[in-house]
Amino acid sequence: MSIRVLLADDHGVVRKGLRFLLERQPSMEIVGEAADGREAVRLEEELHPDIVIIDIGMPLLNGIEATAQMVKRNPALGVIILSVHSDEDYLLSALNAGARGYLLKDSAEVDLVRAILAVHKGTPFFSPEIAKTMLEDYMRFLQQRNLQDSYDLLTDREKEVLQLLAEGKSNKETATILNVSVYTVDSHRTHLMQKLNLHNTAELVLYAVRKKIIA
Image (cartoon, rainbow, N blue to C red):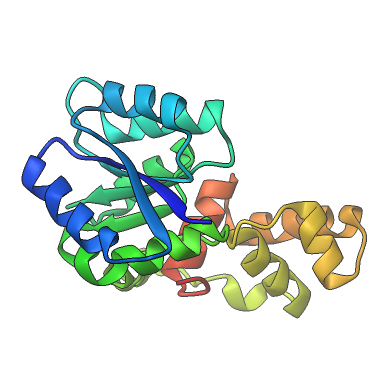
């Protein structure tokens, strides 16, 4: 079956370009277009797409808030944010809202199809430039404060759990893959979060992107 995609951007020329790009993909179907955040939320409820591509700077309701509303109603929805912003605050906000992908607009032509395919399979996807920028910013932050990255403090098992959780696997799915109990996974998760000073799943994913643990 085709992957059903809803496009949401307040610039008609951008929507036209995205449509042109995706209509050439036999596995994808454009089911609708929205010109503002409220329309995107309404059309998502009406059309039941698998994937929503939404600009972060939408009128009436911004892309972050629209994402939060759509994902709250439909947790299985794959939302990919389009943005001109590569800084960490925007990405963290997108992850906290429930987005599973974050693309810089200038790389959408190259990365959008791969992003849709990945997110549809349940795997997060981010523009490669984002991971590079965040790693550089992170290393600069550590150097300025004379700190050390704690990744090497993780055990091999904790590193495995980190990657699987960052890829969107649940504790139960991670336990099945690693052939351990859910309690054991939860214990590893607690320990790695403490070692890395992370506080929620969004920060965990952000860390994994920064360290290029996930693409």
